[in-house]
Amino acid sequence: MVHIRKDKVSFRAQLDVVFPGYDTLFDDLYSPVSLTIIEKYPHPEMLQKKKINTVSKVIQSKTCHRQAASDTMADKAIEYSKTIYSGCDKDDIEVLILQRLIKKLKEDMAEAERTIGEMIKLAQELPDFSIIKSIPGIGDNLAARIIAELGDMTRFKKKNELVAFAGLDPRISESGKNDGDHMHITKKGNKRLRCLLYLAVTCSIRLKRDDNSIKDFYIKKKQQSNPMCSKAAKTACASKLVRIIYSMCKTGELYQYNK
Image (cartoon, rainbow, N blue to C red; front, side, top):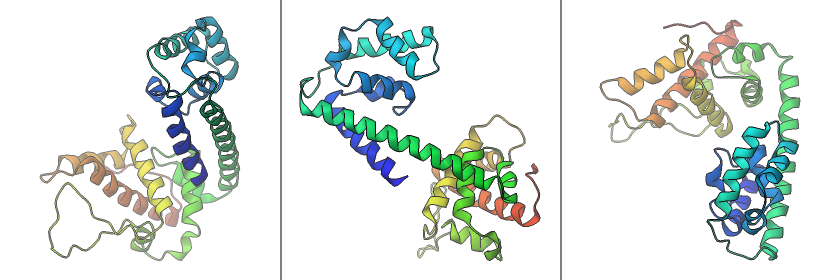
């Protein structure tokens, strides 16, 4: 996944030169619609005089969007292209570089999707997959990736060993002072696992389900007498989540809500 992050950084840097502000048009710059438009029209001048119907058809040919939605997105992109100035001419090498970066990014994203798909198939054969997936906020993708980072769970004899492995164990403060804004952790463990747990927490607290102990814990940390900031509360939830995962995998039980 590291190469995809590098691809995205390079792509955004080049995009700021050739088509500044393009990323503000979409909630997700890397969505199929966004990449389809910028790949076909990598320079504002290439888009300015296009008809809505023409751009809309390009969007529909590469995505599952219907005409009405495609027309709206096409109109938005065309109108925006008329309001900005590129940092280069449409025939400059900068435009070609952007197109090549887009192509590489799309290829790497497709490869990543295939890899994740294979990981999910392998993970589905393991008993821990259905157990971890039963936790609110964790789907096939996250469950497979968490399992890959956890490895053999039997090597952890206690919950705290797994917490430390994830780098979520509390860091001892030399001053002896703590505040509600932060939750100091060692960060010495598996960074990828820690990021996945944080992502799982973020997904979990966005759910509208009532049977969600992670969300309950997050709200509790935000509303306590010494309230935590959002990031600290999520970190505390990640620590709780990894403990829940440990207990569930040890007992072989699916998620059960405990208020």
